[in-house]
Length: 218
Image 1 (cartoon, rainbow, N blue to C red):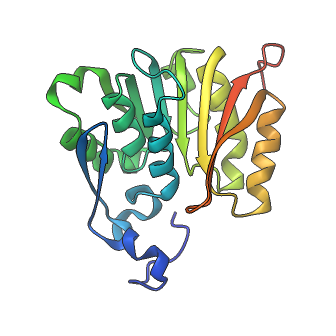
Image 2: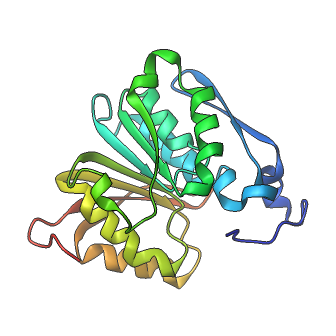
């Protein structure tokens, strides 16, 4: 599902999303990601929240090297790729239809010596969570994944399954609508939540969440 209909360069601010590729430099590596808005919609373009989250990770405010991380709703895979370059063991996930596109970007941008530390895997929030180890991840990453209210309960259930009391969730997002703040309110019932970074030029917030030990289940 696309956030906006596909109209070539209809909104100047979105023009970059219609490019067939996007190029970045993180961890001293040139990263070139294929994009295909017309075919795959929001899952196949790089959103500002992903770029800002990668900037935050690269700043070193949180320990990544040697950690077990999972990216939710990875899309093009930028955040997961950068986490791998920073030394994490990363599971990069999205829904089934996005996996071929996602896998190609990951393969093209993760150096061969790191291939063993990266897995691309299907994950629809709230479904078949037994495929993933309960409380099995040190770090849960999500960039611009909070925008469809119908997914909020499943997303929160997924986070609860993946996180132990020592796990850290990092969510990067724009607060576009009142429903976005509703998800943060839902999250605060089960996690301690604080805003740790704000990028004013792109209007992107990064929230850090840690599981409340006394509230394990939704």
